[in-house]
Image (tube, rainbow, N blue to C red; front, top):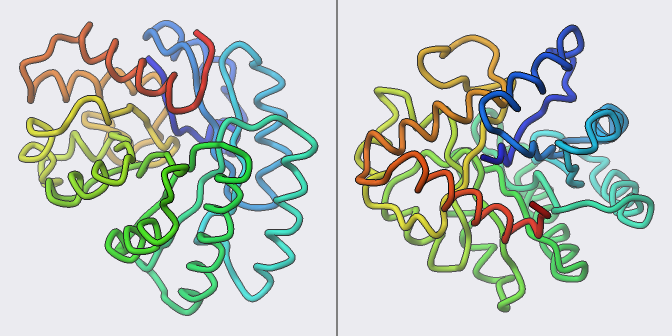
Amino acid sequence: MIDTHAHIYANEFDHDRDEVVQRASEQGITQILLPNIDLESIEPMLATEAAYPNHCRSMMGLHPCYVDENVDSTLETIYQWFDKHPFIAVGEIGIDLYWDSTYQAQQEQAFITQLRWAKEKDLPVVIHTRNSIQETLELLRQEQDGRLRGVFHCFGGSLEEAQAINDIGFHLGLGGVSTFKNGGMDKVIPHLDMNYVILETDCPYLAPVPHRGKRNEPAYTRLVLERIVSLTDYSEEQVDTMTTRNAVKLFNLSQ
């Protein structure tokens, strides 16, 4: 299995990061993909990748919740990192209108800018959306010229939204939300095209049941897999094989 979205560089893991990576390995998680969020996260993310070179791979991007009036200079600094280090994706990027829409215009422009980076560099994008799937899809359709690929991470939307995402060639990242009884994903997962599904945790956030409300970690990727198995006719081995294959292809990973 591959945890395609994990913030194990966050300070929530400073006291037991070695044990977290070890527990992930014991559960069969072979790779942990690290999305960047802002300028401050770059150093700890790269340090974590360097500490666990057989497990961790980094991305580079600006998370929408960290977009503000300084977005142009922030993006300029982030863009320069692509010449300093090999990254597997542009991410995490997107639009978040959950708390505040003050910087919606700047978020949208930052999203478009980073989508164009992905096309220029032939990299996938990792997309964060909250209260913004339709706005995000509209911009993606405008920019999609056959070169864009990526994933809507932490997907918790409707089947119609899932199909719209797949229709433009994008994957769905399933994580802890898939296990929530009130999340509605039990009605969606049985009908998903498994060629477009990858696994994630988004740790330390959104821990799956039975750990909901506690710190999440990559080892819990297995709980997401087990939830998919419980809602479909697939075996654990089949879900593992399909989602790993999808992640390896999307992020151009070595096995």
